[in-house]
Image 1 (cartoon, rainbow, N blue to C red):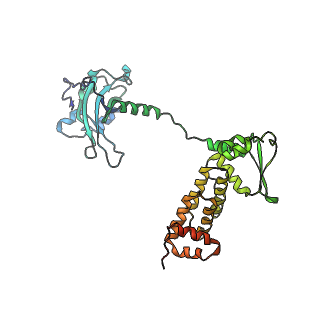
Image 2: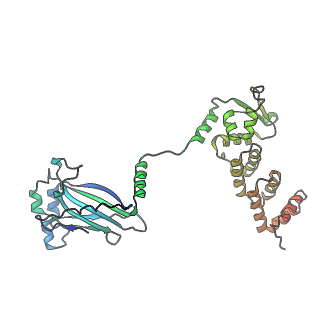
Image 3: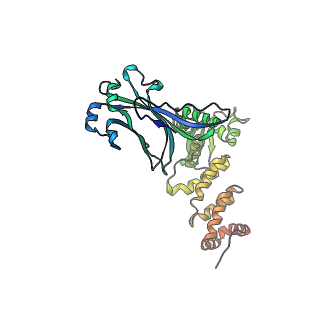
Length: 361
């Protein structure tokens, strides 16, 4: 695929570009270059006069080698083409590619785990290098232009990859609306509706924003923007039949779209009450989140109360119902204990009628 220079008189040229084609197939290539600066050249030369010493002739030449650093597993082979040339800082050609006459080597090579180093032991005769004028202030600079050739791909795919590469330079942070609305609720800035939740001395008041609640819940929308809203605009909305802690968690979800943190010992009871509240205000996502949380806690101590919840909230909670059935199918002893309680006679009948349980002696 490529050739190296065997003497200073005959220098090889880079391979000519491929002819134009009307095909839609192109080669995906990543290109770049690197400047190797060898400072204190005279000192380094005296320390390693023989270089790598592949042959006796090598002692008269400067050698250049490229190493392929493998950072993937399993190791992947890559095909790369490269041009090696000396550059002169004085002529300001570090950034712009020097003319083709300065190319000392041009080749294509496949690097792999078994052959990860390749180059030229006779890159340039040392005496010619010394007299070339390319060593400036005891610094020798070699420019290596590299192109890593990828798999064949359509031109459209190649263009899309290039566009994606450009776009990746702009970091777009994840959406933060839930956090921002949660902060708005915490500060109570602009709150225009007040709820009094709970009964007696345990009642609590909560401020909220009508537009947020209406956007999240059709039930709140009807209550806050219905025909009686102007007459009752200044009133405090009372909710006597809900625990204030549950309503607080409900508001948290409506602002942040996430379940609030719960203590482990309270997770089941809170999720059950929050599920009932979600059904009441038609918050489908909250109901499913609570149901999912409850399914993780189906056990001997909770299955009875969860089945009661399933019956109370029918026809919703089908996922929780299935999880309870599956648990009882695998633990017939627990099922018999439930059947022995009068309070769950109707539940047992429902379970048996579902034809999903089998009791074995």
